[in-house]
Structure formats: C-alpha cells, structure tokens
Image (tube, rainbow, N blue to C red; front, side):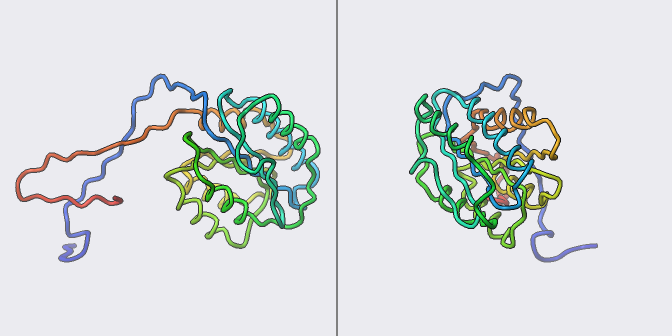
Length: 226
C-alpha cells in the first residue's frame, strides 16, 4: 500500500543506543527518597514487608548520599523537611520511624506525596524515588503523567507488595520514571528485590548524550522524539 501523505510517506530509520557498560561503577552519592504506602490495605504482612524492605534500603545506602522517607495514606508526612545527609544521626531518626510504622493512615492518595517530592528543588546529585505500595488508585493516569513530566531529573523505582497489587500502575510508574519494578508476594524473600532496585539506582547516570547525523546535500532530518 502506497501512502502519499503524513509521516509514513517519509523514509524512516530507528536507532537504538546501547552503551557497552562491562564494568559499571556504583555511585557513592545521590538522593534517595522512599515513599511508603501506609493506607489501611497495607495491614498485616504487607506493612511488615514494607518495613523490612525500608530497613534494608536504609542500611544499604551509599555513605555520601542524601535521603528522606515519606509516609502516605489519605494524607502524607515527611521525615525531614528536605532530604538530609546520610549520617548516624539522620539514620537513627529514620530507623525509629521505620520501627514505629503501621498501616494507619487511611486511604490511598498517591498523587500529592509524589507531587511534593518531584516539585522540590533537585540537589546537585541524581534523584531516585522509591515507591512501596500494595494498592491501586483512581487517578493512575495523572500519577504516571506527573512522573513522566519529571523524568529528566528523577528516576522512579517501585516495589509492589502483596498479591493484589496493581501491576499496571507499578509498571506504568517505572516506565514513566525510567526506573525498575520488583514485586513481592506476602511470603517472598525481600532482600533480593531490594538489592536489585538499589543496585540499579546506584549506577551512575549517562548524561549529555548527543547524536550527530552526517547527511548528504538536500537530505533533512526530523528526530522523533526530540
């Protein structure tokens, strides 16, 4: 079939960029923000697993990083006003919160805590957001769109907890945020999932990539996406 108008009438070339990273060094800095679902549906094994995952994350962060913990349900609260340096004092405060966490914050309002975190000024370090949740939300399209609008400054990772987690929400979130998703059933081992996410987040970012085309005279180029 011959197409005489529109994009498909043009010659098309798809280019995939795959850097050869045989030895990927781990970054010793970065900003790590953990957004924890503490809605009522997280009761029982789910909040227990979320707390265990958070404990593993906190104990494994790089020494020169900044971090924060955000709890959400119907409302949200932040451990620190802004991300703080990873020190013995700040870690002790985070571990106290981790130990006391319960699924006692009502419904599942995910958009507002994400908006609060993503609109904060980015430190001079790569920002990584970790979403730990078991639930679905009625405004998933808006949540995913919000994350997509900040993907140039923030990578979003997700840990889906429990059998009833919305896989479409979790996968949509990390696809928009250029991150990685892991899922844990109520009786699954948590440590390998946490290690997988944190290892990915700690890889140094590749930035300032430029593609140069050497084209013959009379040939123009339209890049999609820009």
